[in-house]
Image (cartoon, rainbow, N blue to C red):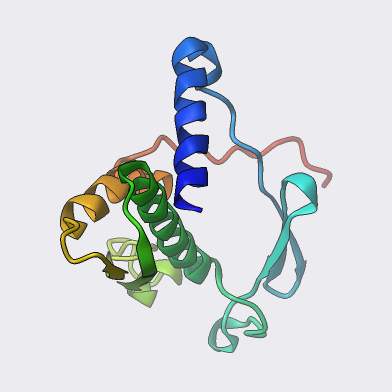
Length: 170
């Protein structure tokens, strides 16, 4: 499996080096629809869907993960994936990888109680457990994976963001 991943990454790198103009693209869109209370269904490419909800304490039903949890899930799964990719590129066999992401938030932000408090997480942390050959420099492997993880990269730097209201039926 490690060699299959490494071979695929190598082919992608070779192709993109020869076709630089194809490396930059528009990512697939996620379309979210508020359906019932605070339940939201998100649709993406190839029929992908997911549902979110908010806790009952703020009016949701608590039946689905919150968007904030999905952010942490995206961070954790992206970092675990990139650890696997970087290990494969280095020829390192991993016996197991677990990434746990948690964060600290202040509800004064999301609820608009105090505009000086950020609505999003105040800080986040990944705890990573890897089982591999003891001779492997896991610190360097994790640092390289984190540096190339698109989710954690987007959170580390200020990605330009706009929210535009399109023509709406009133």
